[in-house]
Length: 280
Image (tube, rainbow, N blue to C red; front, side, top):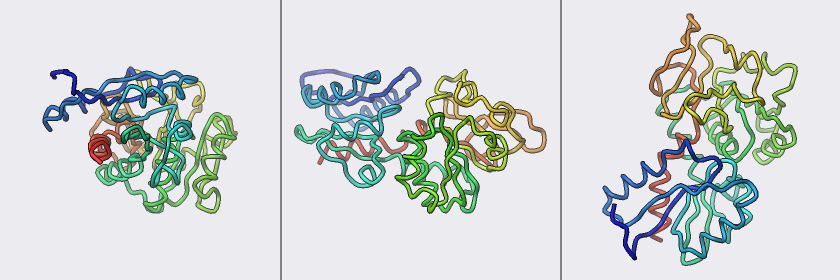
């Protein structure tokens, strides 16, 4: 990579960012595409998001990816939000168009493609979604589009889950809302064929999502055989083997019921999105 006075800067904002593989992915792609561009991680702690967005315009940063926990809050600081991002109130791509900051969402499409590649049978399925932030909004939209039978949304703070569910049609769309402290959480999760982690828990390779304080339930610590998985940083899947109940690791598509890690999925399309919106 050669940095000069014409190098365009892209990056990712979120908190934390120690897990992200976005810089390696994008910089390799920029090199292959012959772009004079560099992509860097930009950790932004909660409370610093407004100043960070103002800095994008001031510094002439060409585009950003947005990850947890900023996907919902960031929309209010942008000049314009387009398409599904406006519909969901969740942004994961920001394009700087000559000083106008425009928000987009590629998470929904990226997650849809990842579900297709995994072979997971979503139509009519009972699904548990853990977490209620911007990532969860995109996941639920993709699940609804794919014909999921019923979606159980779990979150530590019930009011946040209710807000997310309401933005996507709530009970009328087949979404019910539970706190992790709900007495029926274990029974409900055990009945789900697909469990999706849309929280920040499990971002470290050595931390499965059930180690989080907000997710300490028997169904997550000892999942029923054949219907639970968690995402890890190398974006392989760890899941419970049918019949044996013994945890094992495998590539996408090797288990009949999968958990899909959203931050792994979003990388499928973000480079394309950044390149396209940056060139307009």
